[in-house]
Length: 185
Image (tube, one colour):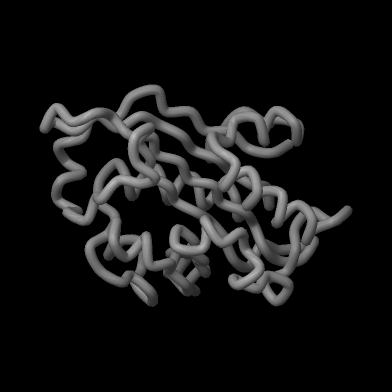
């Protein structure tokens, strides 16, 4: 059984999003959906997404076997992962706890058809200042079925707009603290 994160009303959910860019991204999705549970994939034009989010944008599709595959990946995500992961399965990109957490979260979004926001502080073993990790994932589809996941992954420090984090192996030497995951009610 999938454990559901806390469900928040729209104002509470939006207030958990750290920074104007990610709130603007949520507002874009919310405008598209109107009174429906979610917009369709065909309504989303990546060029209409708030420009600062575009490099951090991703779209996932569900494979026939239940796994997830990156359909679209922004340039910032290619930097974070150290390569372009367009067309790659989630299992080819993430491992261990990160993979387990992402699969659990994405399965819940598919099942419930509701946006999810995950936030944590990452502390590099190198002693560098911690950085804020945020992942906002928004469902796309029909009233009956979620067909795609539209998201943004942001890594930020107070002194930098984003963190260079290309070494995938380096994630094993990062301590994660204060993880919070919420969903829109």
